[in-house]
Length: 438
Image (cartoon, rainbow, N blue to C red; front, side, top):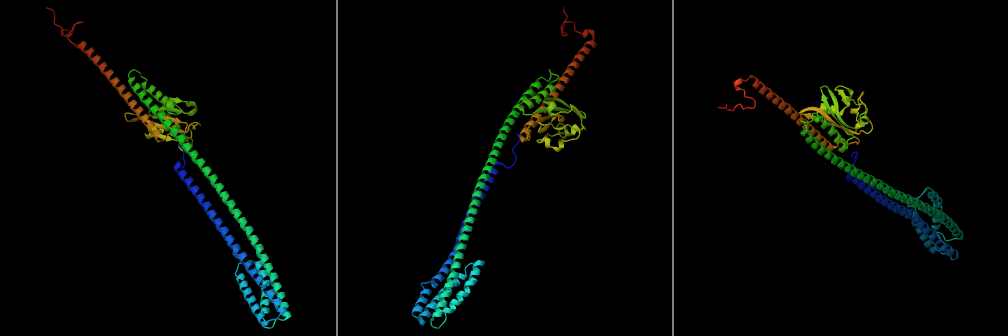
């Protein structure tokens, strides 16, 4: 299993927390905005519709039957100039003040058109009320007609204000409904996003957990492989003098251990032979994992440029490609194509007496197989194998030197017997130091 990529669990949890806080803040701001909108609509409805209606009704009340109408009826029955003047002045002052307050409110074009019709009628009625002459029947009749005309126009204005209030209320309801839908949508979106992020975080956690388990198992198997390698090296060193193929058997066993206990799919040993390289030992399905790869190739061949083992021998350090199918450096014209099933490749140089003599090549079926811990263990395994090669070479050299010394001693003794005088030669079965019998 490849190592998980992307942000860590901690970073993702912080992102989730930040997003949740952002969504909660957005919800709070939306609620605050809704409250402000509702308050603004309510204030506008009161200031621009209800207050003007009250002002218009105040004017109607002054012009109604209880005040101006009652005054006109009483003047028709009992004309009184002083009383008429006082009553008219109160009517004029009351209606003008209420009308002036009304004109300061917000108005729409249809309302302004109604005001344009009403204003001349009010001016004419105020002018008639302000006349200083006595209350004649014609004047009272004219005042009553103007009063009724003004009241009819006031009724139209009041009806218009009420209709506008109804329209504004409907708009406010629509705005509140839209805001509520937006808030609900935001809450649902928050829930969906949080759910998705929680699933992603859990998936990341599960992926890291499984990757950690696989890594621990891989390291455990590599430790077992390293232990078996050391045991094998000790056994082969003991057989160095009795087994002429001890080194070849060591190579074959190392490859087998890498595949059986090291999670590798293929392992091989490549040795240097002058300007050529030879794969002397291997373990795994070579026909499927390295199809078309030669057992022996020259240094300048296309396969040598694509071979990780060749690079390790030439470079003197391990060579790694954890994404081999996507590695452009491994694509060389004339070299075999990396087959499916090979995801990671690595090669580790082998030394004998300080000189690079070959490389241990390992293929794995998992991307990112060779992490730092695995590379450390494989470098240690290659180091142990290099030490074993030095030991086997030293044992072999010592055995040859000892055989040569024995052969030289045997020749020396044989030559000494031939060239010694007869009087100094010992008889058969006698010691040279034996005394003659008397």
